[in-house]
Length: 373
Ligand SMILES: Nc1ncnc2c1ncn2[C@@H]1O[C@H](COP(=O)(O)OP(=O)(O)OP(=O)(O)O)[C@@H](O)[C@H]1O
Ligand SMILES: CC(C)(CO)[C@@H](O)C(=O)[O-]
Ligand code: BAL
Image (cartoon, rainbow, N blue to C red; front, side, top):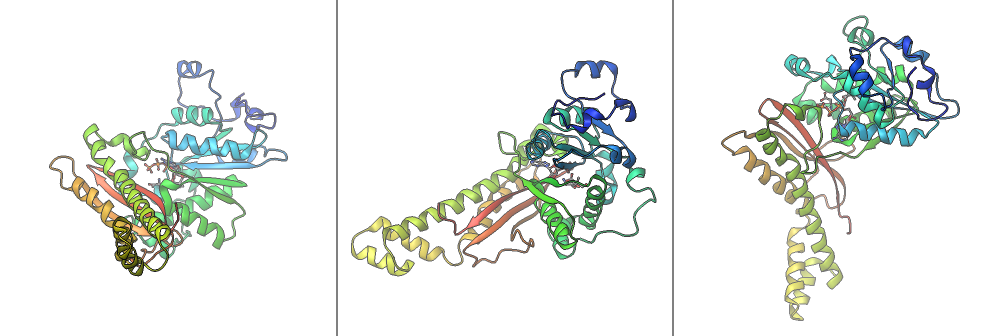
């Protein structure tokens, strides 16, 4: 019997281990991990169906492609928190062939189920649903699929044709199979999260979708299963992604702080304020007001893009282990269309994708234009 110690309604504690197929885990590994709660491993839809729902509490699902890291563990902990002690957390582990373009990317995608069970259990999962490809697609490639629509053709969709149709198709299937009250996804895959929200809204899926902020290494690199393919030198180059995003965010904050200071110093429009302050001999405040007057209305989006671009260009110009930029885009979170240069307020996402060596990485940061500090 598996135990998770997550409460009396914990369905995993009611699922005998013998009913789930064995993993390839050795007896030695199992005993070494005896102190960590091991979630029930479910390999088939029938086993998942047999998992009792928590009485009077919710089932919360985290979907993954395995090779779990601290980013995934954070999602599982957030799911545990959302489900509460009486609720149930189910983690899915499935490398979905439908969302891969290059066969090589699919073939080399890391598969680490034994370690995943331990990570999921330690983070509070009650069950791990890890079906094989034949279980998810018993009739071979599905003829009928979800179409992501225009948002799915931008950025990641343009670089990975068919990716989002494949992703949404499996997410729809996994939502039907797991039937959660709530499902959590990472903001690291911001376009994916936006599309899942859109699918759930457009097609009336009875589930709440929650986004979880990106988890990063101490030096800023967004955690990703694909990071393990980076050599130390490539990893160093890859830091340009997050550093570009942070620099752009800091530039926007500085510009907004400048604007606020100018507003606080004297009322009126930028140019008038600068002239008035100059007459009063307020040279510093006048310079601020002038800078703001010049910077708007075409300032902030362009400045944000240029700041990030400069850092990425520098990494692309390196002789060894250069970064190859795929896209840098400042987009509207609602539909992933480009933010126009004259946009003065509202939410945006600055998103980047680049290849370092053989590894393609993505990252993004949420920004708010016109927000007062
Ligand atoms: N660093 C992270 N912070 C927060 N959530 C993350 C992070 N990395 C992955 N996730 C989320 O975990 C879920 C499963 O993602 P997935 O298994 O594809 O991992 P991954 O690290 O993104 O792998 P890869 O980038 O190689 O595809 C997704 O909702 C994803 O957004
Ligand atoms: C949502 C998902 C599990 C669908 O395969 C995958 O795209 C991922 O891990 O982000
Ligand atoms: N993390 C998103 C899934 C993918 O790259 O296919």
